[in-house]
Image (cartoon, rainbow, N blue to C red; front, side, top):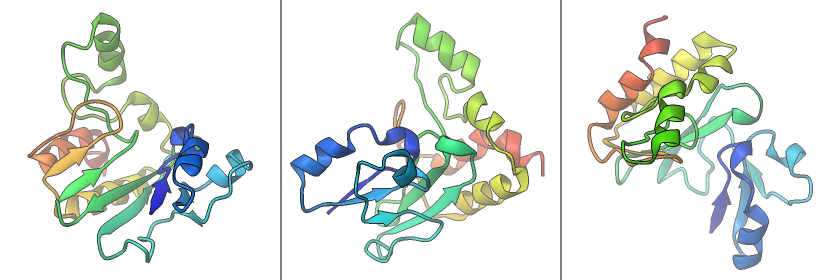
Length: 169
């Protein structure tokens, strides 16, 4: 029913989804309609769940500057946190170049926020508040846009990933 881009950086194939699923509503991250004016979006995401899925999903806007602003979701029934680029989880065995990049960016072999995301947070207090709101949700599993799913122990993994931010407050 919906094709959702939770960040501006993940909108590349939306026109293909529009063609494949013409009845589905295209839903945009904040700022995406200006970035992709050729697409007609039915909704723009915000800090509160859309009424169409509010019974099933919680959501919040994580305050990152520019195109990396991200909407985070919680699927309550499966206790699954859904992240796009806010955290990565790159395991060993993905090749030397991938391992090197993941180490340098800060998310190799564990759930972590990249150094780029850290640098793009202008309002640390708002980001800390968003991280605390995420940690208050009832989840166990974490799906990331890049890397492996955290099948269990999600809150501890997310708390470690945001330790740099939470300790600063």
